[in-house]
Image (tube, rainbow, N blue to C red; front, side, top):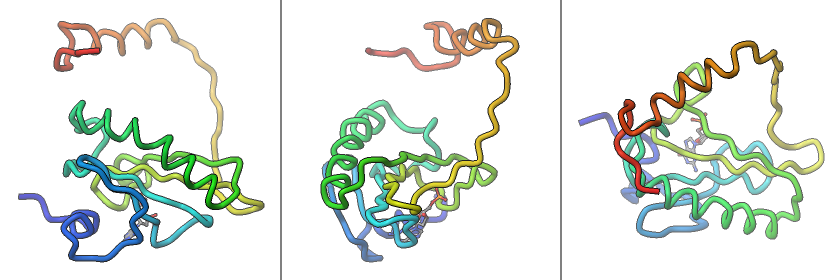
Length: 146
Ligand code: DGP
């Protein structure tokens, strides 16, 4: 059994949170260290560390809920701009190893700072082909039902 994360303990009701939404598959609550007012987290109840480990069912549930949380945060805070951030792995700034999406309002000078250094796409078609190969029915992924 993996060591329970802080979010497992929130899901188990062991640690309190400011809950904003809950259904069978998803919980959303306020981040305890908000970057801006209204910074919320959206997590699957499925206990997986990384996005790529999620079941289709959890992924679909999260996808359905994210825009609703965004709309509610916008309405409650008055923000018109926001980021949705999802980190995977320590080097990608993940600190809690239970899948979570941040919904981060951008209000005035408060919000997510992005240090994004754009490069140049050199081998676009070869790279796209390499990725497509893993998405095809005989690739490395389980079969899809779209
Ligand atoms: P990340 O770096 O993407 O793994 O972000 C983890 C976030 O989780 C971070 O913004 C702070 C938040 N967080 C950590 N512990 C708690 C907690 O006990 N309660 C709540 N509400 N948020 C937490």
